[in-house]
Length: 298
Image (cartoon, rainbow, N blue to C red; front, top):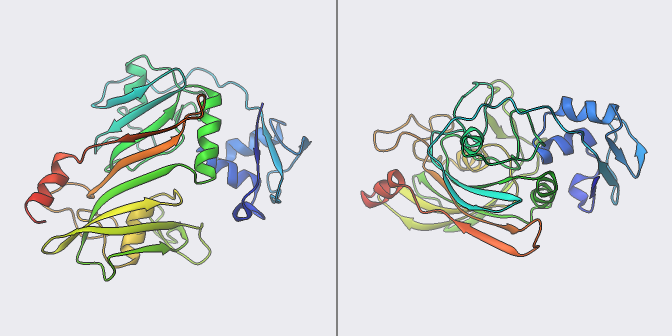
């Protein structure tokens, strides 16, 4: 049985089902079923799905094993950067989802790992085995997946407490007024466009640091550091500053001829290994499409 202690006031007064769904990448209705069946308790007592968390609450989790995975093995162009008995680190290309979603994709990082015989954590199954965090389909770069349930919980707690270091390089339209800064603006699902997100007063706390590392003719090359991990966070925050990512057809202008996706790359990932407890770091080189944009001056 694993446990999570609420030590950050940010999570106080939030519903336990909402927090665990966000942290473990498990749909809220499944978390609610686990609570109803007694697999999730608080301070060793049965709880309700709408229980508001308090400081120093301890959530105990004993999720049952799921049936066999329903994601079918299918090869995809991924690069396994590192693998051991508990984790696997993957360099993901653009135009590939991390796991199957509503579009029911057959190719994904998960399917490619299963094709290679990599065993993944059962948490998040049947569609999201081993997935502790994601990057968008059209964002390239480095991600980590868990191979064991223990590794999954340890990594999830690091994302939960914001101790994992994630850095991105992106190209934005126009020139940012400040050379560096922090966007601290809450993000929520868009009220009318259900596949999009937006900055909204009652949204989830979201913070992104940015630093301009090169100014091109009409584009800035920007280093981003995430302090939270909301869906589309960098893309939404850049739209909020009126400098959307180059090629972002959802939050900016239509995709350009020079790049067929948003120009965003997860180039750095650092975390504490769930077994050795040593800090480890991984890098991913900029892909050719972004390099060409920079070389050609945007």
